[in-house]
Length: 392
Image 1 (cartoon, rainbow, N blue to C red):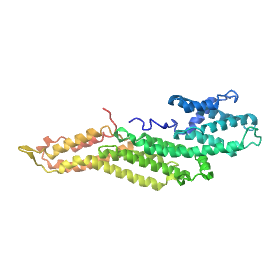
Image 2 (cartoon, rainbow, N blue to C red; image 1 turned 120 degrees about the vertical axis):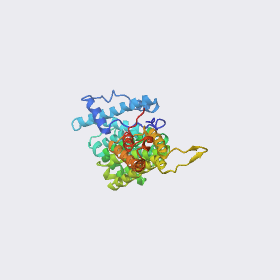
Image 3 (cartoon, helix red, strand yellow; image 1 turned 90 degrees about the vertical axis):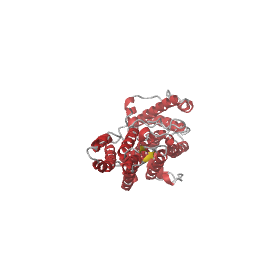
Image 4 (cartoon, helix red, strand yellow; image 1 turned 135 degrees about the vertical axis):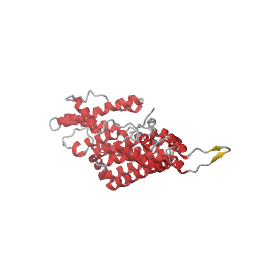
């Protein structure tokens, strides 16, 4: 597969866990009963400055440390709630200060889920449950930080759409496989759904949001899918031959549909979305087969002629065999990851090629068949080996 298309500029690194909160939970469980003294913790501003000013590797390391600090503080707030109010508030104030500093950063889309975790903890129904608030707590500062976090959510979602549309199409996977950005976006959407309660609170209670495409989680999911499809269409133009373009579109759209079917995404996109895109996949498959294998099959119906002088044109069978070999060789590195789709594409190619070749093959007498390079059975055996993505 080609190198990451988002390797420069804004960060485009996706959380390694399928569900971001599971990473958070794991981190918290590793902390155990560990406590941190708010007076001896690392200076928040210094940590944020390291994230802002350090090199990429150092910034990533500091960011992971920051996430761990959030996990520890949230755990301490949960464990001491109702028993040690002043200590709980010391953690809450530190978390609020942390959130305030984070809003000063230029946050890339992969940081969205940390912000959503902060917003969940800073939710007034949870954060302000205690009436015994310390003097240093400022309601105005709290409201301001909360609003900046909400605006950061909108910004990161908007930035994701820009990154997908402008950067992802710069390079494409070899062999028409599933684009890494297709995986990224579908995984990203699944994580959004995992945080839907927090997102819904933001979207329904924020009168400052003027973007109609962000008025609901449905709109956000649908808009991201439109951006993904637009990117795939643009990226497909980089492929030559044309058959590979539709092979790529078929692969990626199938991957997206499989991520939607049987999941919560159905309720946000609708069953009709799946049906329409299933039809697109079928059309892409048919177009791929026609464009890729049509030239070889056209050799079977071409009339024999003279090339000039005493040289006669090769027989249609020879021309077919040569063209078939060329097409087959070019497609040996093409890959269909999904086993069911792979078998379906193989059958579609076999049906197209064998159906056209069999009558031609049957016309020849046994005496002439010694010149045939392929029997229908051999053709089928060869075709059923395709789409494994062989590199040799």
